[in-house]
Image (cartoon, rainbow, N blue to C red; front, side):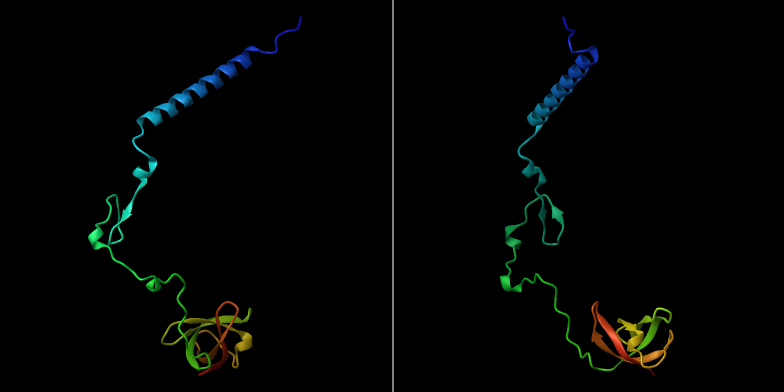
Length: 148
């Protein structure tokens, strides 16, 4: 006659598994009995007229109506400017080994990329220069850079 395939350790593991399953079921039943209302009621939040989060609904008298056309959902367009105009700036950084740098425009403090191919005169950091702009792959680039 063959011996039973169930060993003592298998029986113990099965008992532990059944016990965990029973405890988990009891906890679930307890949570279900103690919960009040639905989950959505506990999670509801409102935003008042000042932008603060509160748990009370807003006053309907303070409601503001907006026209659909007044709502802007896109990135605002950049303001148009004359790219052919000659501008003045100062070389903020220039790496002669790599052949590029940045010019900071006087007045607006905007920084523009400059490549050695856009230089007319040799420049170093701190030089005052005049330049024009062109649209590059990653933004505006300074071209026709001359020392002042």
